[in-house]
Length: 283
Image 1: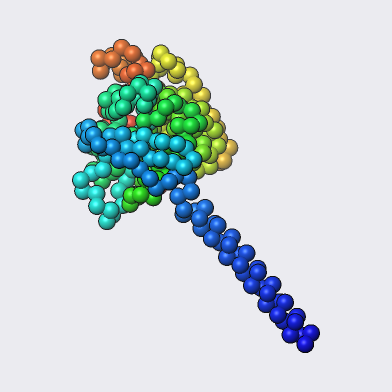
Image 2 (image 1 turned 180 degrees about the vertical axis):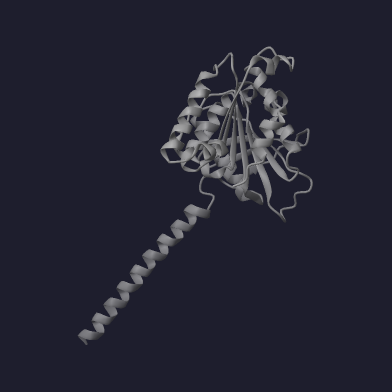
């Protein structure tokens, strides 16, 4: 009789342990796969501009309403993975400046189409260049990765001016989402360590006499990233594959009829060497 009770007790204990393990496994699965940070609800826009569906709104459970414009190639039908490009604008392109002004003020979203015809392009139009917009960019990117058939080895980003400040915070929080990043006429507000740990390729471009930031902060960002790679034991050749510093002198802008180097950073969208580097990266 005692043996039967002991056996029954052991069986109950095993079932309890199994239930706990199963619960943990399900929790881990939800953490990995469930869209915990965004709801599935999107209000689609009704206007189009140069191939973009304008002012879609992702109603994020945690991060509020996220406005974005999106370009989906006509060839996309979900049967094969496409690349994804996320472009963040400068101050003049934020949402309070007017719906759609980011696409009317900058050409990164349109020039990108020349490098990969099988690529979705998202142009978030956020409210600032701080933590809130960084979290919204992450939420939107994760939503797009869940919603569409995206090649996770080809997820690109650029940030211009304030958009670069935002994207540097994004890369502090979620560098694993991206394949490569183009940092234009900006400064780095995020932590360098996560970028280095993920070996995320970064291209830093700015005018030597940028009127807003100056070029020295960008040089310092480059050196900080480079030093961390050296600490990890990477060779100069390996670092060159991951990190590019491109300081443009005045002639780069004047030859293009541009007198303002900060505003002239928008010209990087037309530079085949710069954009070609970004879209040539593959995980």
